[in-house]
Image (cartoon, rainbow, N blue to C red):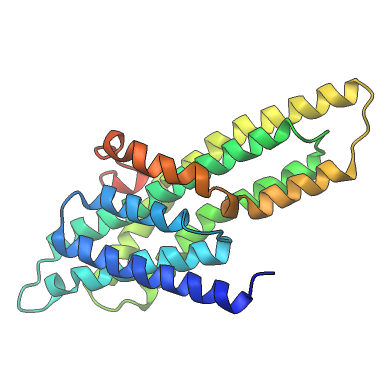
Length: 245
């Protein structure tokens, strides 16, 4: 059995590493959005993480961004325009990484549909609620960081939060799109098998809840190659967070 203390230390180490990597990326300022996306996905895929751990990693991304952009916000420089652009790209990169993770979660759940006997409406409702927490976590982390950041960076983050809430986030759009496909597939599987005379097995219900609650922790193999293969293809693509405010 894994030691909880070891898991906590591993998560903290991953967050510290991600924060340092993002800070360095902001200081360098090259292909920032895609760098943040790849750095974040690399940490997502480095171990089995639950929602709390994903929140910690998301917070690490924002902390690293603030640390890297801080020199531009000094009174002697006050280059808030450049700092805003950097923070916008970091938030967009984090949003894109979460969207890619959400896509992997949807695919994993769809694949699992073929292995379970049937799913009830209650099961689907629970699954959807679990998935929707991912976007809520993104927005809450952005909000809490903006609230406790007192300088111009706090104002910038507040503006990015308002933009994401008004126009939607990339992770939210992916969750909505992925859920429609997933719900349709799960519903069709359930109806087909029930029509064949199969009873709704408790095992299938348990399986769905396990997938919905822990799917984010089981996507390492799905996310890891995507981060590498898509690096070139998605380097120029923006997310909802990179729209014009």
